Image 1 (tube, rainbow, N blue to C red):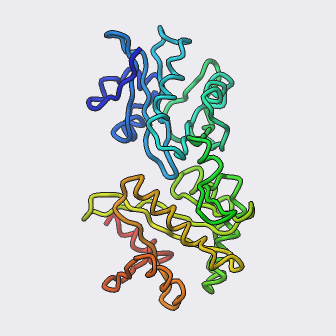
Image 2 (cartoon, rainbow, N blue to C red):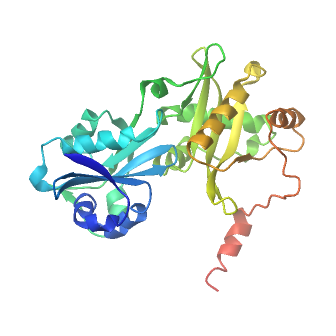
Length: 319
């Protein structure tokens, strides 16, 4: 058996793709992205896997093995081959129906249960989807991190300090850090975020990522970021929304370590730049950022559309 990368004309594997995902419209949303591997013996195509980048890592979007070749370990081989292409420390997700056969397969590949997206199949597919006699309703996500070192966290060069990606169990901590940062900035009254909202947007919709810094095993700070895009560079970038270190631990290099890890992720992902905003009265932070080589974009002004103004403009969209 040979596993190879499909570099063009992925649509020619339509039958296999639809075996795993019965909606061609859904398939075409992810098929052009990421990479696709296929397995073959001679002229026979045995199976395929599509893996795409998502916020926080990678997701296996489609995995199928042709029926005559089931129970030969081909699915597991495809999963291992896909993960082998990813860098150490990459988080990998896969979504499936919550059935013993499929969940057991992915657990045998090293995945662990992460979270459930309620009504995913009924909300996203026009026709009911069945596995055996059972209709698929909720999507169960499983996850793993490639490489033992990444699962334990990234070393920082600071004694007792490591940095790791946040998991869904960190929701209370993330919200607490957000509120502490808002309090420092004098904006605590503007925080309306809840754990449920953060769960939805960070871990279910995967629109942002969070790094947690720990000192001697205890939370020390965090960085929340997401991808943006530069048309001039023709590349994605990383936008840092929040950076916070507990006051008692400032001056120890933890903030720099978080930014260094963010820069390393940007380089690893081929991003063109890392950007963030800073309040103009926050002189200590401005000096800190400049010491790292960051440049202030003094010629630019930030505009924001929100609340009633955003809704009023939206109301004019259809003329």
